[in-house]
Length: 348
Image (cartoon, helix red, strand yellow):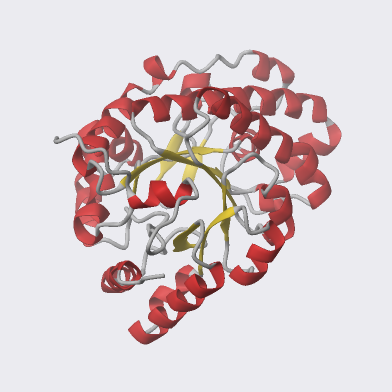
């Protein structure tokens, strides 16, 4: 690869530098809506194989890059990928998500968790990120990602995805000492993992607190925010210049709290008007989002209008154009292509 000093578009915007258009990528841009992905999934039916065999994960990560040239290329992985390195064994069931056979429910189980050593338990991450960096060079920004402490704790305690979160909320409200012990260990492990990703080539890291939106603001302040801050503070101690993004699903009620997490960029979902989000977060906070993924089922004219509306409301500083969450599996692939084409033709 020819080394260039040019800074990729998304990285410049994430740093708050002036750009001539909003950079664009999509959460879950490598996934089931793409024919190429479905064909590869048939060959490698295990999600862990697709995300942990380096050459397969690299191929999947690069499928949207080759098709659409987004401004960000994200590591194909899962937020629970580091858990086995802590001693929390898991699998990822197709269509069901993470499954943990022995959920963490006791203080003794938390005590038995190992410190994360990513060089030993996650060596494939280094191979994948280095390959992505070599492939895209300065033409795109390589993104890493991690799960947030509350969300990883929810999986670890529930043992799987949940609609009620009764196990972890039961722990939070009846035995909070054990949960805080778990959240502290997870936060420290996540910080180690994020630093490792940066050292391996990730230029921006997004933290997904997917389930923190299920907390009341009061409980968010107790069980989510302090541990987000703990992760971000540790990353910034060693990598102060790496932009950090925070996503909370269903974040309308906690936007202002997200702004004090230590994140450089807040992902806004479609339940909040982008102009309102800007007003609530302050003009200095950078934002990402926030089209409803369902917009991509609309006509080209409708998609174009929604892109223009979002970009206008976000303004010409510190905005990364994205969906408010992941692209849906049944989305027409040609509409994703149109989304990227339209976005890349924009000019401030």
